[in-house]
Amino acid sequence: MSRDESAPGAPRILVLGIGNLLWADEGFGVRAAEAMAAEWDFPENVTVMDGGTQGLYLLPHLEETDALIVFDAIDYGLTPGEMKIVRGDDVPSFMGAKKMSLHQTGFQDVIATAELMGYRPENLLLIGVQPEELEDYGGGLRAPVAAQIQPAIDIALAELRDAWGVTPTRREQRAEAPLADPSISRDAYEGGRPSEDEACRVGDDRFIRLRAEALAAEADLLSGA
Image (cartoon, rainbow, N blue to C red; front, side, top):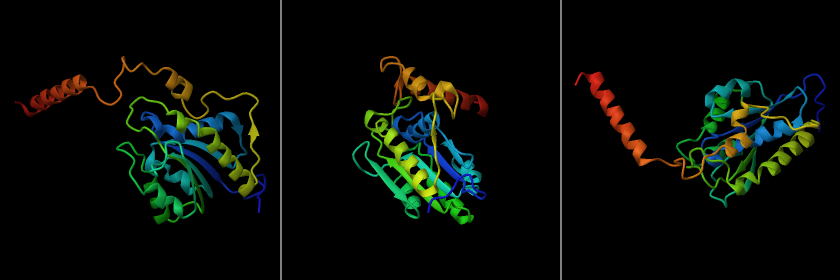
């Protein structure tokens, strides 16, 4: 049954984008939430949030939530850009099935902790996309992943309308960086990316060597050698 979001006791709904913008496709969830908030207005009982890599700091938000929709890049071992929708009790197991990279946000730990503490949201929807590239520091979304932003938003909007009776309103003008500083909005971040010749993506041997030498010298100084 649909619920009237204006009625007393309306369900508290959190739409959460998680991930790390600095590591290419791992930023998918944040970019999806960003685009959704830029294009749509929602009633007061719906919050669209950039969860970034906050991890356990997100627990208070889950405590106040009846229904949770999550955008995330999840390595299912599928074709890059392929979308997978997971609901309910299956969400924690899917989010913890495979550690994607050293930069993973670990949101499955947040869900598990909330469950142990007795306030995991009753209703969960994970809108996940298979990443193509996770080891490109400073990189943006790859084309197959970026192409799924709008389809992911459409699924979230349908869930809000059909399951919760929420009526989003499309903005007359797209908001600029509604969830974060304009300097890290997708257009600014990806548009300002240096060329491959100007910036290292995965690790520069020259920098790594110099940094190691500097750390060794600092250690010698601290030890009195």
